[in-house]
Image (cartoon, rainbow, N blue to C red; front, top):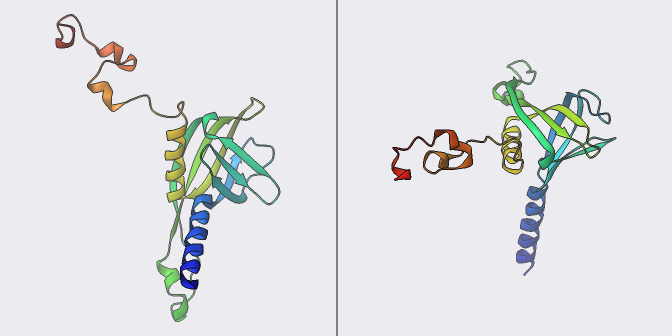
Amino acid sequence: MRFLTFTTLTVLAGGLLAAADPSSVTYVKGNIDELSPNTGGTLYNSAKSMEIRTPLHSVQVQYSQISKAELGAIQNHTPETDALYKVWNLPKHFMTSQTQEMTLAFTNEKGQDQTMTIELSKKTASNLHATILRHSGSVANANWWGDDYWKTTRNKDTWGGAGTIAQK
């Protein structure tokens, strides 16, 4: 019985930690008053917004308010390694971490246009970009796979003239 309770609590705690989805982020530049350049913090994603928490401030951005999201170049970071005779530090020679910058443009709650560039891990950046594209209609590309098969308002200029099969 104790084993079952311990297992249940462990799975529940792991699920809560996975739902919070925190990851480290660095605010590189932008025009947000609360954050100074090169400030480290934690990024929290929720269903409708993302939040950057630093020790002193917190900035929350609704996905629906984001008008532009661009991914920058991938940067490789290698840790400083010790001499090869230090066998316990050999894994450092083979480890590299990749980060990626993301530039966001959005409107804050006061209606002002804001921009920020953040640096985060490559995996987190691609996941965040996909989440923003999924939740923000203004960022998503207007192309849709169905435009090749059906007449929609987006492909009205390619419908063709009077000789098409669809109009007969």
